Picture 1: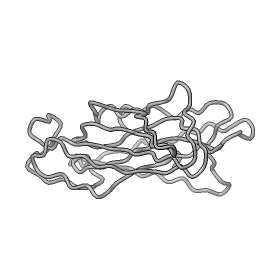
Picture 2: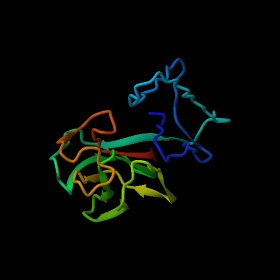
Picture 3: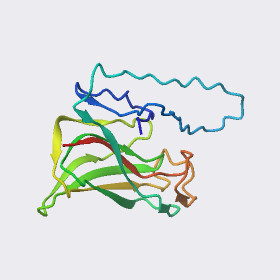
Picture 4: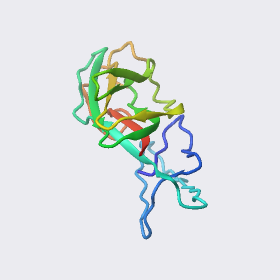
Length: 191
């Protein structure tokens, strides 16, 4: 993944020496999630790339911890689900971007280190679909090989959630904002 754009997000800007790899001859595809309006609309999407002046020192990758097996019962005020990613090599974690839809409530990134210790890296207490931001470490986080990054999202499918389009509906994974997703995106590079 080169990146994505969601409401509230900013362009991905990498520090000197860091870059994404786009092999020669690659095709770049957009995956667009449209919501019907009932009218003819015009798409004005564009892509802007800034190319590195020279060879980078590290290739930045996008990792995901995702769980598509979402089942949120109608009226449920607090349903949660987790997914994880294991770093196979020593790595450097640069940023995290949680992704849920309208019923999203909280999102947590927790590191479970090979020595058995744990650390909460990010806890979003009031998730807002209209303001999905990338959380960038002030100092990149050193991650030893074997670390499990556990992402946990929770949803409020009750009538008390003002963003809930239909608290009487049981909700599962889907592309529309009235469906749900659970993806913990993160940017990192291997050392």
